[in-house]
Picture 1 (cartoon, helix red, strand yellow):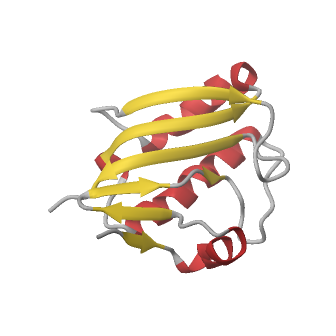
Picture 2: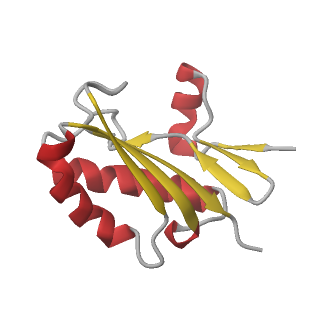
Length: 129
């Protein structure tokens, strides 16, 4: 049986958009995509700031689900202006994701669900123990 993981700060997303930030399925934590939104729902115009906020939001979901960045086995990222922002994204990503690196797919897209959002990060992690 699976368990929905809903950090308190993301309850409004669950209620308003009808999706769980993550689902614990056996020993796999399957995280929905996160965007670099702040507590008021806005996103920064600065790419590095937005990328950092996205990883911080992801950290909250991972922690609530009993995992960490070290437990990520697969990552898919969706990027507006992929080529323009990839180097900045990778610099921020490397502050959070360390060796051994997970499988990663980066996909370019024209827009995301949150206006102004330029990255969405979705991961699967294996929960220890």
